[in-house]
Image 1: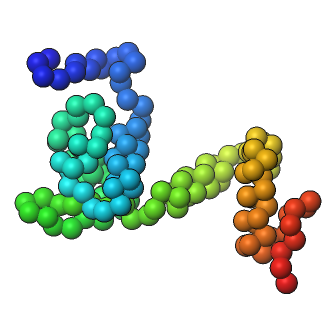
Image 2 (image 1 turned 135 degrees about the vertical axis):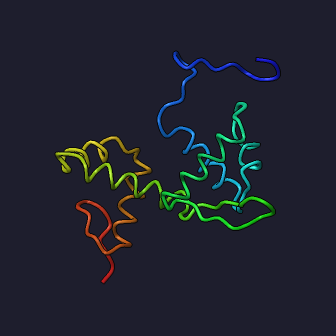
Image 3 (image 1 turned 90 degrees about the horizontal axis):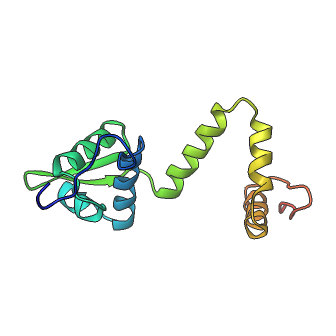
Length: 139
């Protein structure tokens, strides 16, 4: 393909489901301000077609994940939620779908670094939750 990279439909160059959406969201979070489809496309790796980026932005908007405002003949898009909120909601959704919530939480906690474990204790205490062996919530 002249001037660009060829992508095979099969093999390792095919993107995983949701990878483009994740890349578009990451570009918007990193920008910290609304971006047009052309600006988003500039932030993404590879040589995606403008129409592909526009389709992804439209899908994310239709899902309620983006807002948009008129800019010239097109739109500038911004995420509805910040990255931390989005990630936390995805984590909770995965936890809600699992058959054994206690096992999933136990495995997650057992794999935390010591620093993350201390952070989790602190955050739970700030939310008013008691944590066995951890800091006690303030009265």
